[in-house]
Length: 352
Image (tube, rainbow, N blue to C red; front, top):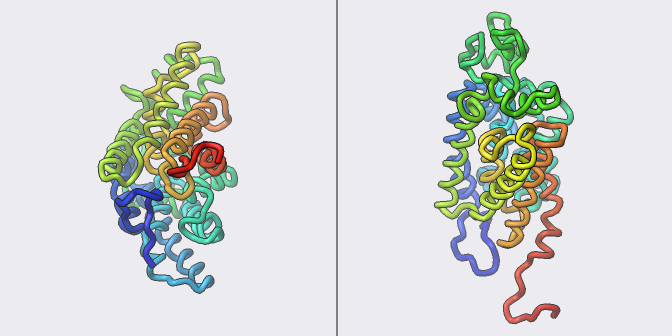
């Protein structure tokens, strides 16, 4: 069985689901490479674990549902979900986090609703939020960039940490996260939020080493990597350009207004754009054709709402990043957005 994804009724540039999913997977490679360069092997290991889990779970569920296994198993949609989960996890999170996340995404969020094309929520983001709520300690144990770590971490050491919680030399995850000055490292978004609650200004917070020379050490290059991949997808017409543009413009407007009103407690637009999962969310999550709005106007509203929610969560919420929560909230709003932005049927007058 071959599925075709395209906007009805007049778009004739259709492509098979498998080809589209594989193109999106390839487009994540620049961002994944940046993750590997700045944070080591952890995310690559989690991606591999998540893919293996997703394939096993999809095979088992399709067998129980008596569906054709080979076409659906090889359409690469499950692999893409697993890749997005592996990208989103802390690099030194335990192995079972990937297993639980991938299993939840495939079995509960995707197959329970009928498989690809029927899931109301983005499977990767639903799994991420489930993991964050269920296992907050493991999901917030972010590894600092390799250049800020006092202990080296190669492939075998990373593998040992993920599967045992310790390096072969006996260093724990908390020791790996400890800076040479004796304090535990966190992501730039988390560091900024914590510092603001302690009374520091944005400028004072930006002096810490985790921010680097630009906006967020390592994270700015990861976001640029996903921006490059997303630009390729737009060039290939695999995703609609209005969605990421609307999201980024919305985030720009919100952050600019906040910065003008209170520069001491509000970070710049570039910090918002190049920190956390901003570009991943803009180009690879919000553009999911199943769980997002369908019309052009609907996509603009959908993405703009997501940008506003990301800003609100980052600025006032309890979590430093808000992309996953914003996506799920927008997934719930997508049917209503479609209802009010659905284009008028050709030949029909308004109100008829």
